[in-house]
Image (cartoon, rainbow, N blue to C red; front, side):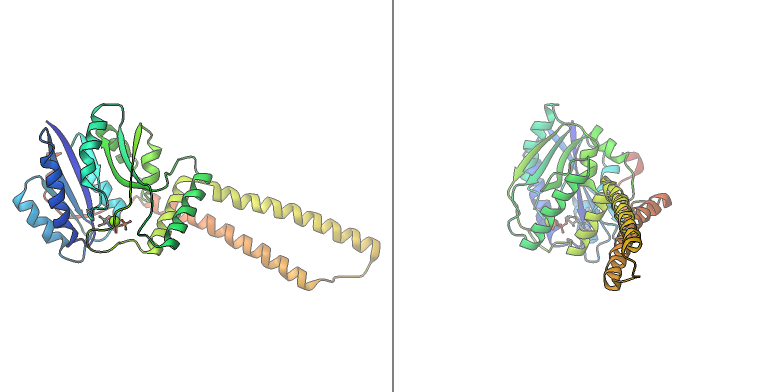
Length: 314
Ligand code: UDP
Ligand code: MG
């Protein structure tokens, strides 16, 4: 029998999990020809999430859990879930029902045909989101698609169904600074997109502060584009030529008209400008360097504290 692994990252989701579970087993019961496993990844929650999942696992042996030793982030949770999954198809979804389980049968019908390795979803609107947040998100997608060769689809969600071979290729990308939206598209394969309206959270609140999202967007840019590095060299080259022209101008003026140094104020402005650009360039360099530094340490993406998945289950 075909098996679908549903991977659900959870961080402080004690309220949302029971609601999600009710919905997902309803969907599962509508698909009698498919078996399911539900892998809940407890990403170091500080509330009762772990116990809530354990209780589910006691009554339903399709429920698997992986508990992290601390909060490692959604990226690590998705990776761990995929690594411990054994299904023929893998679904990743949020626990807050912003990713409707009702789409799973439709995704399965599409992927079963064999024409696609991935059925992915995207939000067609951002209703219910703060306007300033939407504006920044849009600017980010515009920027990254300009400077990266990997296409990052605006509004793409992590909610998707993948074939085993696509999941394995994603697992083979074991980089530490993960940006899944880029990784999904980098590995290639045929992807079908399903659009749906934004849905508000069922319970609890979003785990993504503006600052967290900002850092995540830097991960995306640094991970999938080296254009900022080239940009700072380009800036350096342009300024170099401008200063050569300036020096020639000053020498010629001195020879023709005499009179020594004037224009201190303009000098200070130029020093500030060049100094600022230098710091900016070093900053950009630093971003790449710090990511490289973390990659070379080869730290694990997550540490498991407890799980009910046995190694030989896989
Ligand atoms: N999540 C996680 N670790 C984190 C942050 C979030 O596992 O550090 C999970 C969270 O429990 C949820 C999913 O990732 O299932 C998406 O988070 P959220 O709904 O807060 O994000 P939003 O939908 O607001 O972008
Ligand atoms: Mg959400």
